[in-house]
Image 1 (cartoon, rainbow, N blue to C red):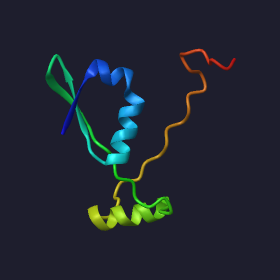
Image 2: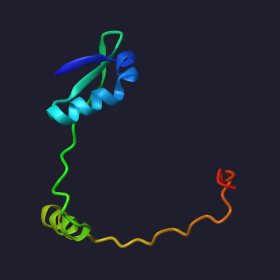
Image 3: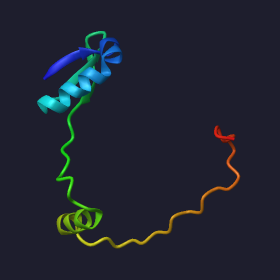
Image 4: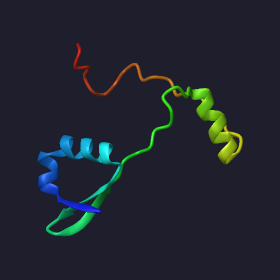
Length: 85
């Protein structure tokens, strides 16, 4: 696997990511010659697969989802100022 210094990766991240995507080969980032992080391409299933198809596929692989959950209410009074105000 190819190695790249972290400083070089910082300045060329977009190019490195594009190369990883195109070649489907990961790289190892190093700091002072020692490996610290590995970046690998992800595999994306067909773009025609909708959320329900994904759910069926995951349930087939891992079993039925057993826990329901509720989405928590949205905080109407955020502690940070809204940058759009």
